[in-house]
Image 1: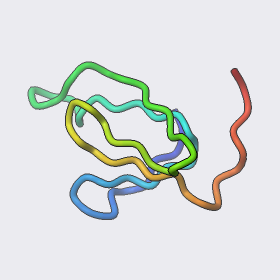
Image 2: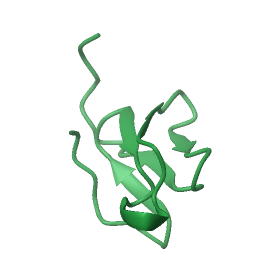
Image 3: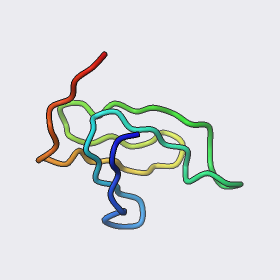
Length: 65
């Protein structure tokens, strides 16, 4: 799983990889695990829980499939 920093506010996470998995925090208030891709805008919002994932501008370029 890519590195995810602590949230910068209640629901924003700075991440180091353009693909992130979100389960809403798990537990009884979570949701099914979904994978989200951060595109050119540099951020993505989970459609289930509205958590915001922002790509670290210093993150290495993605590789793989």
